[in-house]
Length: 243
Ligand SMILES: NC(=O)c1ccc[n+]([C@@H]2O[C@H](COP(=O)([O-])OP(=O)(O)OC[C@H]3O[C@@H](n4cnc5c(N)ncnc54)[C@H](OP(=O)(O)O)[C@@H]3O)[C@@H](O)[C@H]2O)c1
Image (cartoon, rainbow, N blue to C red; front, side, top):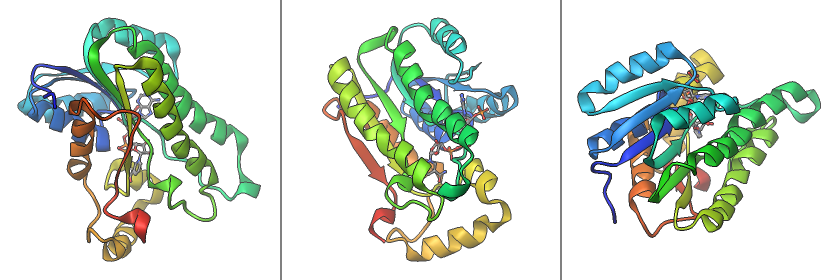
């Protein structure tokens, strides 16, 4: 098992939620961390919040824009681990009301964006490094109705990582699949209804609580550090797949 001490970790989506938790955990493990997101305001707030934990740098970039992503990786130079937690709230309409532009935007951001990150990261990722992407519980327990699109896209990440782990070996490629996590994305999705949903789910979950980003981050640290884990989807959902 390697450690993150002195390694450079790039977290796309590191300005909020799960990614912010991963950035904090990587810093605590001794890594230098670069966080990437679109909003300069979120990046600045995150950089300030993380500064006490270690060496962090924020770079603005949109993973749907290939020229921007190429520039971002040029600016970062050689690095050891790519983590992507970036993604917008998923579309959630029943299939007969599905708005095709919203579906295309979601796929472009979440899946095409991940392909684009892999394409540009691989040029400067050091040997022995890793890529870790994010899927989620919606592929196993989709909201019904309205979960078909997010389920299909989240499910595709396991196949993406398996194929890429063979193509890029010895670079390791893994996926983390979280259950519900208390982040700004959830506020955006359900607003004030959040506390009711969380109370109900916490009572049903084997783990007995809703995760915070700090509960999920160790799975990403494990995926980066474990030099014998590749092509894997790691579920960290408090038992949500079982209920
Ligand atoms: N929260 C949950 O319960 C949960 C459960 C399972 C899976 N997930 C998945 O985990 C991922 C992270 O969720 P989260 O809850 O941490 O969300 P979040 O708090 O909204 O954070 C999302 C991050 O991604 C960035 N981002 C979004 N689109 C981007 C783009 N095109 N280019 C670059 N950065 C982009 C955001 O910054 P900007 O907006 O400034 O770009 C932000 O830093 C999502 O894909 C979500 O589907 C979440």
